[in-house]
Image (tube, rainbow, N blue to C red; front, top):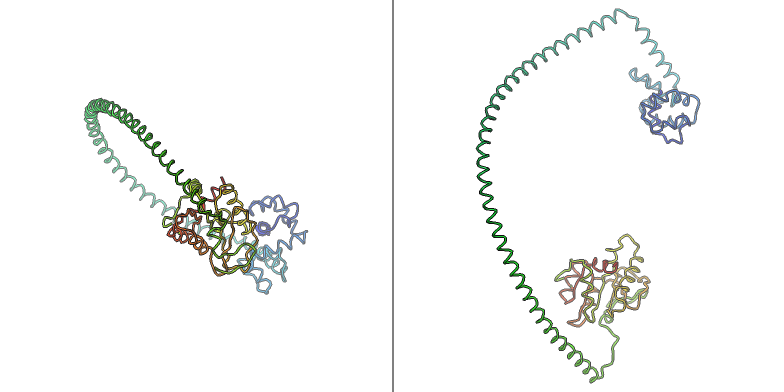
Length: 418
């Protein structure tokens, strides 16, 4: 009973145990039964609440025994002792009869222990069996001894052959030592020749470096002269363009081509209206370099970038962080910026606080953000610098085919972070 209870305690929470047994909560069942057997027996006998909790665990350990007792089936003689222990803890109907049957069986076994003739006969049978086993062991050991003698003879022959081979190897080693000395002398000669060749090559390298320095100096001088000519030409073109604008009296225009593309502004419903070299490089320096081009239009695939940077954040936080980060990146640089979010499945686009430097648009119902980005690029005049930020391969290929430059989303994420 103590052994079975010790197993059930391993499955019980510590707060269901009596205070005297809680120090054994982490013990193995065998150790708990050995060190706290008396406490377990006392708790089962005196603490009904504890015994009820323990009965639940014991029922799970020996379900068939408990079910048989509850059904009124007499326990099997081979499991009578375990059935009596489980009956004492669980106490189903008829548990007292099970314990009395176990006690009677034990007393019967003890009474039968006085049969001296039966004991002598059993011991004689065991002695004959032990003698047979000893004889088999002696035969097996004799066979193993013969095998060891044969192995010993083989090892002696192998040792003689190994000694002969060792003598031959020592003779070969002596010849190899002479050959090694010869090779060493030849290597010394080759090393002196290699040193002389290295000195000659170092001198040649020094001459080439001197020639390279002169060539670079001349190339720098030519490049400075060419830059001067190009700067003069650029200033002439700029002055000519300014003069032409004054001559034609062209008024300044606030309208941008992107304003002509049908889209939905945040919180206002509306109606519906490439890379060829895909940039897999995520270096933010490349994006900054592209943004330095004059009159650049930066188009951002909103959710593609925000889910790259903040995949686990809610969509409203992704939109706010992206628009704020892009606004800080382009602030004061005169860069036209459009951030496009997918609104194809929205009846009403959500509210988004849009800084003055950033245009925020949702695609109209039934139109994806990818299509809206293509419309924005298509609306721009040929030759204008357009940078599209998206990792979507189809978007990158299509906008590049239309003359835009595609940059990976991670480049913008890194640029905003730095």
